[in-house]
Image (cartoon, rainbow, N blue to C red):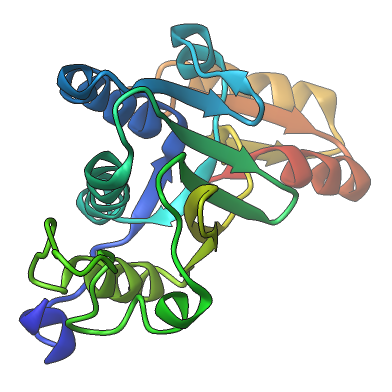
Length: 229
C-alpha cells in the first residue's frame, strides 16, 4: 500500500479473463467459510458459475491477476467476518456491454450511511460495534480502492443496516481479441495468389495465409482478423 501511494509500485497490466479467476477464488473461499456454517455461491450473472463457463466464456479486462485477487479476497474476508452462522455470501461476476462488475454480497448486519461515506479511506473500519471484535488495520478497503483505480476501475458499497452489504469493483470491459493472421496477400491475379500461397506454405515462420483480390475484401478481413503482414 505504501509503495502504491508513493508511486513506487506500478500495475503490470495485461488482458485478464475474469471468468476462470473468479471461479478459482470461489473454489478457495468455499472451503474457508465451512467452519462458520455460512452458505456460499459463485455466480456468473444470476446463474452458478461452472467449469463449463470457464471453458466457454470470456469476460476480459485490463489489469493484473494479483491485484484482482487482492480485491476479491479482501471483500470476501470482510464478508466472512461479519456474516453470522447460517447466513449467506455470494461472489458474482456481471458482464455488461462496456463494463464488468465483481460483487460480493452478504447477509451481515449492514453498514450505516455515515460509515459507508468513509469506508474506503485509510484507517477506516468496517466494524461499527462498540466491542470492535473485528478491528483490523483499516488499510484493506483503502488498498482495494487504490488497486482498482490503478486499473482504471472503481469500488463501492451498497448496504442497508440489518439487511446485509454488497461490495463491488467495476472495470472497463475489453472486446475479444481478433484471431491472428500471419499474412494477408492482395493481388487481382489468381495465378499469382496461388503461387505465392504455395511458397508461403513452405515457410517455418508463417502459419496462416489468406489471399484476396480487392480492397473491399481486405477491409472485411481486417474487421475479423489481426493481420501481422
